Image 1 (cartoon, each protein chain N blue to C red):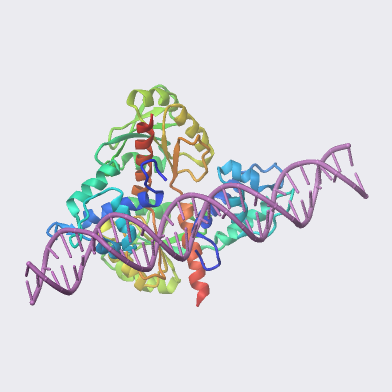
Image 2 (cartoon, each protein chain N blue to C red):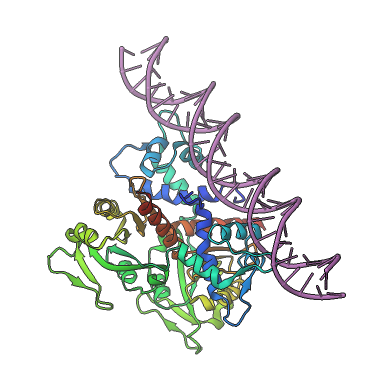
Length: 215
Length: 215
DNA sequence: GGTATATCGATATAAGCATATCGATATACC
DNA sequence: GGTATATCGATATGCTTATATCGATATACC
């Protein structure tokens, strides 16, 4: 559980509420009830209330919540309103896609530079599409310090991931989004979030096995 | 919890164990203990034992587990040894990348065709890179039936996701991997797995806010 | 204005999951 | 061969999360 008393499970549902609220048509009613949200999202209504109570205080009986307020409270809580700088290491196929993806800003995160093990010369490269610089790894520590970057994205092969991770931490990175299919060992004040598709595929596979066997 | 008595949390760790075991050097000892695995992966050793007990029966005191056997038991359990066919709807930037990605086979899944709302003519398209067909949506039901496809990947914009989802279910799809940042409403025998990067970013952001505020 | 109802917030119960503890067993060493 | 030790599996405890229940309150309708 986080320090401001919010559980991981709750935190993981907040972006979903936000998405849903934003997807509501403009012309509709200004209020919404936990009951409605719950049934639209397939959750328990008590759970929705408890989740929302941790970011909002504005629920009124018979009325529900003011959609506009809820959205801004969620955005504020999730940090979508102030942009965090991030950097990415590994600009292969996946890394480049992430570097060029301009949708992160929507989530309060901006990838401002790429780094790559293959860029060895001191002459920096540049991403064609959106003019973001690509530096050699040697410039990582200085860059982090100068730009106060605290978020790192790892998009290198599994074999290199731990080494990259270590360098990030030494450079002051505090939160890591790891796309390499491997476990990273870190001090406990560092958060690692694994974007591991194998986990999802395992769930699908398991579900299928059960469905097909059942009947 | 699944029907063969395995919890979601356990299931989500199994691929991690497998990755780790596979990453071990060839020349090492043939056995490994839960203690070693636990410390390498930052987990409790009891948890590792409980997890492994649900797929294996071969643990021996003082010895540990036979690495080779564990790997094949995990692969078998996770369905990596028999290939499941899948299809993808939406061949934009992300969809095409997934269609061209040949790493799924490693996880027992093969994407055999793409579908797209934009392909309206009855003349089918074809992915350049690996010669996988791209069909119009009208061919979805027939294709699913003929090829007994049970897994669907959704890579369309959020606004179209629910509609695509409904069509998949009507065509016999039982498990869905959803890359659209939206909640899908489905019957309860259908498994939806959301690959939602916003959730990860929320965690990073929350962690950062705490770290920076603490000191 | 009074009553009915939808909805909220809080408390209590239950379920799922992780961690700790303990006896049992197979090897290693003397 | 006997004893020590690493490790396993199982049971028990505790924590986290989800669900169910209940009284309180703001609107709607008569």
